[in-house]
Length: 233
Image (cartoon, rainbow, N blue to C red):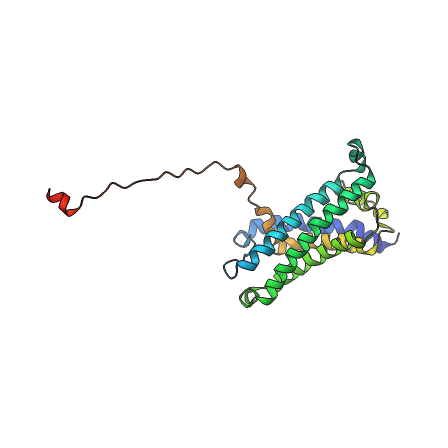
């Protein structure tokens, strides 16, 4: 195992995680007025709706799928009767569904940003990098689902758990296909870039809206005003 491999699969992930945590914290403290998604909905709404809804559902379900599949060891799935082959089958078909949704959504959003004159006029280099970064991560992930023939349950998954638990083992990533290595490396890089982009709005998801107290609206009927004829009577 050479130095480049150790840097890529031990040092680099922690650099990205540190940038993610410190960058988001610093920006929240110093730049709250720009803590948003910088939505261009008021410029064009019709095509945004389709792309945004499909993309967000796809990427959110992809996140939870990765969290459940990668962070939970296989031995816990074995306890409920899901062996490694069944686990891989579930991951394959569910990953294919949500991956296609995320891919279609991000392509629609990119097409809108590049072709709609008003949206393109307000787009920044940062916005373009963000969209292309998401596209690359999603594309490599979908490629692995469609064409990658590799058991990640005993290589990539324990490596990620080792990163999270501060017991990294870069040797687990030896022999992993290059497409999987590109996918995870790009994902780490996107996490590191997120504090400097519109992706900060991931922390502004309206989760508490589901649990807020109800707002009561009472109808107020104004008393009828007397007509001139009624006043004379």
